[in-house]
Length: 373
Image 1 (tube, rainbow, N blue to C red):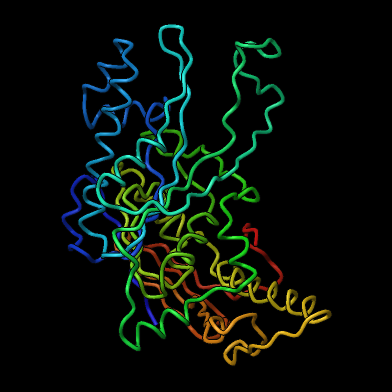
Image 2 (cartoon, rainbow, N blue to C red):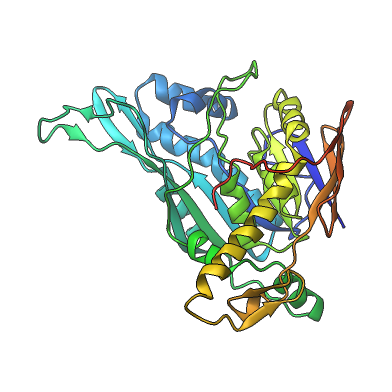
């Protein structure tokens, strides 16, 4: 049981390393157009963006920025299998030009692209990220007509390439059943409002930029388990600090990532190397423990009719009876190619070796990764 994880440097407008129709799921958070921290990197893709900003032409700059993202979405369309899913975490932007404060609706512009290219827009998710700022009023504060609401959410847009993905062979059907999730997890994950996941601090140490678009690990972890099978390939064209790669490793999926800033490659490798295998494995242990607690509470009032032999516990539906989990036992590789190995049970020791970085550590107990389930 192994998965591979490829990390490429360069712009994702040309992903020549990836074959057509070879990726089952895309999970990504692109640069948000009209958010000032991304002006420079988007302007490097097209200098006309900088000119439009300098000349106070926000609508032109907004469209030019999205045209650069469109080139990436073109490549996503090429590499994605029929029926494959695209999940895009993006926030809208607010900005003032010529004294005029306005909203720039990134999510609707991206929806327009994908629906125009024959994707099915599935129900989207609103990720509510409340701000704790003591003074978060915008505009004229308490005075009517001139006050503005504060953006406290981002979007997770969900698209499917054409019709439903087909699982025709007995092997594919079984793999799908083994990749199922718990009934009670589905009730949380498939809500259109995620309000129990906190944002991630944006400060990083890279010389090229001091902030990233990092999202918390649970966002890609949920999406990967919701929309792909174990052994599938997950792709992130805006890899950043490598969160999607780590979530793919944890989920027994292969992954491919592109990062335009080569200074981030060491950061990605360091993040993977410093990740605690025991905490990754404990995510699965915690999911099983949470289900065990759910069963204990449920059976006080109602009978649970189905049973999972592999987990040796009751489950709510027949779709959960073949569900299987595997645990990480080793992560090896270099800055651009990583292999993860798995076992049926939690290993006593786990090795992480990325390039010259090496760590072999016993698996402690009682620690919990910062995920909320």
